[in-house]
Image (cartoon, rainbow, N blue to C red; front, top):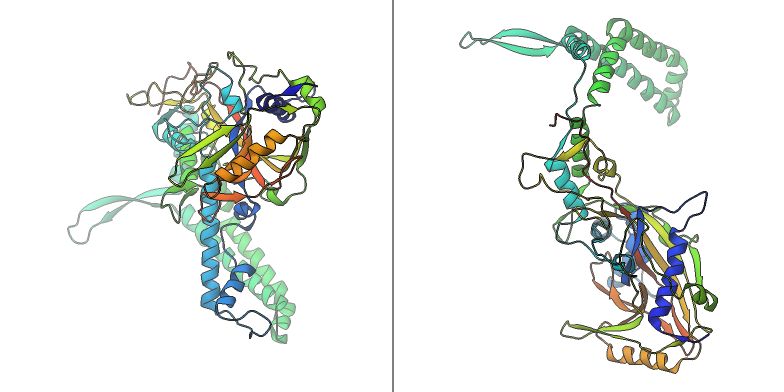
Length: 528
């Protein structure tokens, strides 16, 4: 097998990885609406960056933090006396841990709150991640849609309108009240007798249930015999009081009638799209959190399952010399897009940052013997969960449009549905692709060994790294640490045969292509 260039190797590797992630079969066909976009280089992360996914946002006292406080107080070592932390110190440690968890949540939310740029006429959007910055983040565009959109006005049949009016007259009454100061008379709407009796009987039933449960709990947790005797002798009496209260509620409190009326009105009004849209707006606001350090708002987002970072169920990926022969001329594109040309992945390159903040990169232009090349790592695909505030089903519905009375938005589109699509939100990141335990074996390659050593020496103290395509091969890279730092050193081991990196990294994202949106039905004539 002849020597090959690093860029050729990168293309072949990513071709196989793309097949593993996207290809289907006759029973489970691949989706034409999904594609993968890759970070170049990958973003290094640690399992501790995702602790909030399993712990939640409530801090606890970590052993390491407690030991640090004890050590400062002289409470560690063989000869030291044990130091007991005060409640105030424990609460301070819990507060620090809570702040760390909130920062982790903010970092992840901002990391995936972007819109992929898929407007290029080539395949570059498939080979490296490009973010659409000119229209705002995903949450900003979604919030704009909910604020500046119109939905179909629901028209109820006349008989249903009359039935609702009748039921509402049963629930309310209009009375005249006289002002004792100036003798003026005003009309006031009050609950009807049906509603008053319903609430009175419901309260009586609730009191009976509370008394029953209180005596039962007293007996279950009793530290004296009186509570046990009380329950044993009076349980039937208390139970009968509950049953009698329920019967009184049903017979004299109009329980069934009131609840049937409420259920009918609620069922009919839930079909009103204005109420559904308002519910989505409420969901968005309930998910809003203000960052501790940044002071900016973000919307809570998680990855599922939350324990993915420590899971043992990652998929093993391996690229051998035999894979190169069948994939040396592969290209990558979505079947629905008529793009020109094939994108190419970056080969192996090294980057470094100087003390002044500027950055440079140099690419390895040598070759490798494909017979001795081997690459392996573990990977997983973790779905992004925004379900508490983001509802894509609304965006693809045919019952909404941008407000045609507003010149700022009346002609806007989330996606024009073309190839490639253009708009405010042509695609949505749906999952994160992570890689760990990477090992690249090259065989003996003196030129590459010299390149690695040269990159190391020139980047000492300046944030250097190595990368092949979207795979981070070690060094110092950007990360999403909850500590707030933006740079972290990732150790990598290199020898005469290759490079290994045990750490975890975000290699890319699975993205979903949005169909034409908005695409309202022409038959809808009334909007609100």
